[in-house]
Amino acid sequence: MAYDIIANAGMIMDELRLEIGSSCSRYKTEDSFLNGTLKFINKNIDDPEDFLDCWNYIDEIDIKEFKSTLIKLREKILLVINTPISDRGEPPFK
Image (cartoon, rainbow, N blue to C red; front, side, top):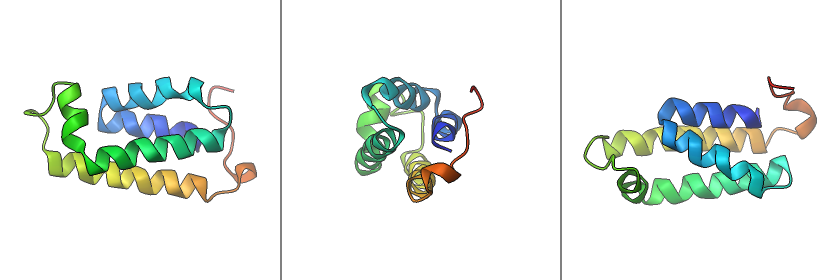
């Protein structure tokens, strides 16, 4: 389930998947990854323009729609956080 967060981010924007995926190495546990990703998503919900501008998408992507998709991703992250690790399943690459 945690791995699916990266895939879901990619459906929103490749650069979002890239940022979340590359952050994995900073975290020692799945839960710390999920909590760090939740912080990252919350930051971008609060200030989507900064993320979009950083990737030169500020004039290309509807900010309201982007923010809405981030809110949906946050809901998925919270669902995974609230699921016991033993019930999250194995990643497809294992």
